[in-house]
Image: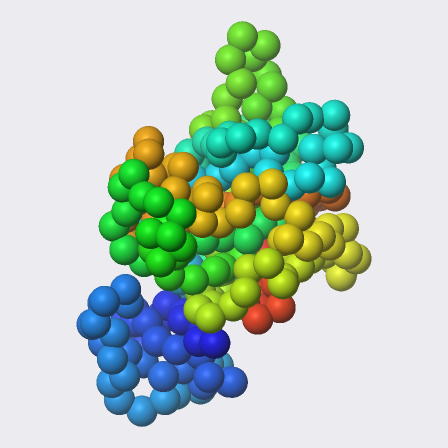
Amino acid sequence: MTLWVRYARNGMEGFGTLEGDAIQPHTGDLFATAAPEGAPFPLAEATLLPPIRPTIFIGLWNNFAEAATKQGLSHPESPLFFLKSPRSIVGPDATIAPPPGYTGRVIYEGELGLVIGKRVSNATEEEAAAAIFGLTCVNDVTALDTLTADPSFPQWARAKGADSFGPVGPAIATGLDWSALRVKVSLNGRVRQDYPTSDMILPPARIVSLLSRDITLEPGDLIACGTSVGALPMRPGMTVEVTIEGIGTLRNLFGG
């Protein structure tokens, strides 16, 4: 397994592999020509950035069986998806802040993220599986009252795409078995979500294959696989942590 990170250090940005408490800097293209360059340096000397800057950020709805059962929903045969603004993305330890003037509920949704590593269009499941570069943690933050404010038009893009509403990181893990993972979310240290990724209705390769029929995916694009039970509102000052063993903990403060 390899952990890939992006970082800021000494006024410069770079990427590399996280090896214990050190970062090995790399040069080239993360998805094609990455190669080690220079000596490792302590993680403490750097600030971790979002590990990717996608051109497309896709989120899934109703993709976990337990949550579907609880809500009385049928299992979809194709992805039910929305687009989050790529500008919503922030990294570890960044502050989540609602839009100015918004005073309604803001909920967290801890999710497994799929990072695309090669261009894929109208792909078979085998081609789609080969196009998944790695896995990351995602917090699909939602302004819940905006989503349902207008009964004639659910505002998915606005409710989920606000600045800072897409925390991602701390790393991209390659070589992990997605089906053996658990997504855990805690608020101020209290676990609120804890569910197995094996409960997905549509697995990663099928998700990517079906999405690629509608949207060409490029290296660095991000797909959040949906969430399960336990998503709740946050209060100002709370720290929310999304943890997936093997990837790490994505920690953010909700500024309110």
